[in-house]
Image (cartoon, rainbow, N blue to C red; front, side, top):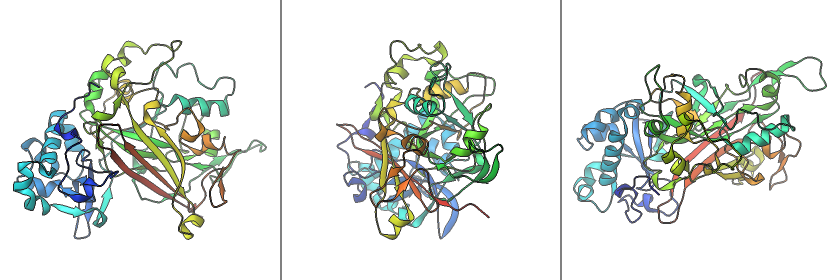
Length: 440
């Protein structure tokens, strides 16, 4: 492993906040993800860092002189964009200082512990917001397993189109419908044309689906007209969140030719609250997807030896479902699938480099969706379109219910974590959304 490791990744270190030391906790000292929150007594949004079941208010900590000068100014903002724009050196220095302040083994923590406590807020007392002001959102299609499975449903003779192994496929999403975790999602309406009908009809989708994805946030970006090498793209990426790309599959089937996804996917996209930095994920780097010998080598602008060596991420992603009947009976979420992000055909750095390869400007806070994260077997398929074979084979739930696609009142819960022997497990939190009925 060549990813840069330092004291912030040391598995022996513990925080003086007890809940950060519970085995399996999402937010131990080694994580320190960033988010944006408000409280009942202070409605202004501000930046926080998750530690155990607490949130450290970075704005007030900066005002108390606790943070390094480079990160202190960005920490006073109402969103993460200024911090994302500040660059890797500032990110790493701020992370090191936070690890020092919250670590039980440091002199700084012992000397400032009472002061730091004044800036802690219980996580259950905060309202989380979108982490950044997102100017651009692009969703990719980077899982070859997902692309093959979906392609086989619509084009059995040619599941993968000729360009897939040469270029990261993506489409531009709608930033106005990005919503934070916990926001209900209204069932959309659209044009649908059943096979037996001679004309389409307008009405609520009957094939509402989720898509299990990771989102990567652009940090520094690139000026308009310039490009990013894969190496520069790696340094430009700030961190990741969970992403649910809600999809109306029946609308999608009718509208997507010839220009691709449109109304079937732009009604809602859910993002989790916490951004886990690529610094925190350094111990969980893994080689990029090992391409079969017969696959083409990426073109030079999409190929970088370091990215091939450690451009992947060993992150486990899971989908849970709670139906109204399960909620009524007090049943916990049923796990629909679990897969690893390491199976993705393209890395985030390749996606960012490709995005900028025509001179497109990427700005701090822009979001790159990975596309549905699916693995090689059915238990790791990241949407109902795959799991149910386009609705033909409904998923059977433990209480006797079944689902071909989502019904009103269903709640989808995405979770993720990174785990590897010799390091402390870190989590991504969760991304929730409950389906509301279509408007009359």
